[in-house]
Image 1: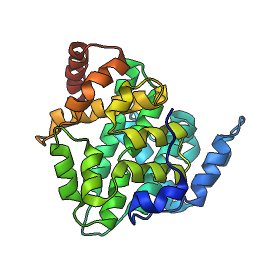
Image 2: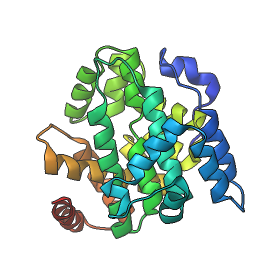
Image 3: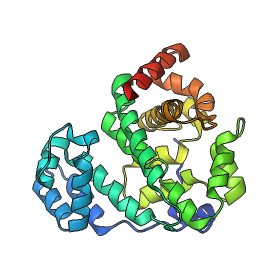
Image 4: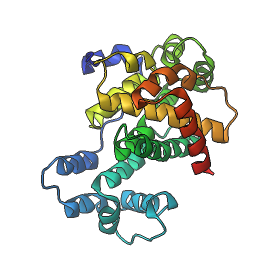
Length: 281
């Protein structure tokens, strides 16, 4: 597998983009989850120490996407139903929203709504295609583009750059960003994932999620990272087909190698796309 960038390369690779430090509560929860006998009560207590964080997490847990119609009355009840890892995802999501908040004149509501939709669709695709665990696909779908808000805080022309990258038919998305910004959201997201102690395969997939050639190169990426990238780019394609008329060339670039990852023909994946469009309603 190829070597991943080192922290020493940060200044050159990030071109002035600031990576926020990992909040202490996240480190404490991760340390507990890493134990063989992780205690759910300890995790609930750590979340509950911050009343605002606990309130936001409970609001998300009680949303239709997670609650399944039932009402959670406590963090502990939510953990019992959703699991510690899913609650950890909700905590990371809320803390990232706070850490990545920028100029109030640049609203990020649509970004986070799209990320949440990508996460839910990625989890469903992973369940159907059986190429990666659904909970891991959800995590990656939620966080894979988290470098974009940090780029927006550093550069005033990011929206124009992203539009140009989306429209690029031959060049890779990140090549366009590198040319116009001197860095790209995949590199920024990778270092954020590293600093926030997200799993290594998440950071690896974030770094390469527009590098579709890497999907076809045996041994370059872990199987988990390959599955995450393939599922996520398919999820984003389905979302665009369902809800927008935006120009998008990513699926056309990724399709041949993504289908290899799924072990399916392009026609079979087209059938999956139709099924997912029906699933979205």
